[in-house]
Amino acid sequence: MSKTKKEKLDDVLAGLIKVGQIKACGIVSKEGLLINSITPPDVDARIFSALCSTIMGAAEAASGQMITGAVSQISVKTEKGTIVLLPAGIKAILTVLTDPEAQIGLIFFEMENRAAQVDEILKEM
Figure 1 (tube, rainbow, N blue to C red):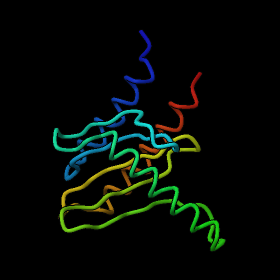
Figure 2 (figure 1 turned 90 degrees about the horizontal axis):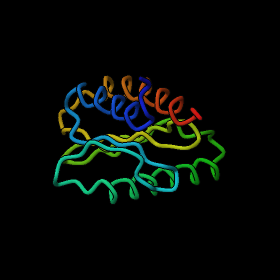
Figure 3 (figure 1 turned 180 degrees about the vertical axis):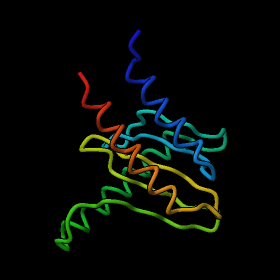
């Protein structure tokens, strides 16, 4: 039996969270709507989604004004962790919230692979 899109997206996020040092991860539409997520109880996934979309939109607007090309990744480092955003095709954004001591290079590498998977899943009819 073939998996549904939701099941495939669940698998992508489950694989990403297994990397470790990730508190939450999600797939957000460019408009800020939550597509799918794995979050702890203290993180409101819908608010996180909307804020991540806003951050990506602001970065894309700044990039457009400065003529620097497409946004390939965004990271916001805070005292309690890092928020990382990567475009997942033209429809979505892959997001993570890491622990403060997270190995960001490893997480970026894994996110790039997972973002490509999300793009392919969302393109399916």
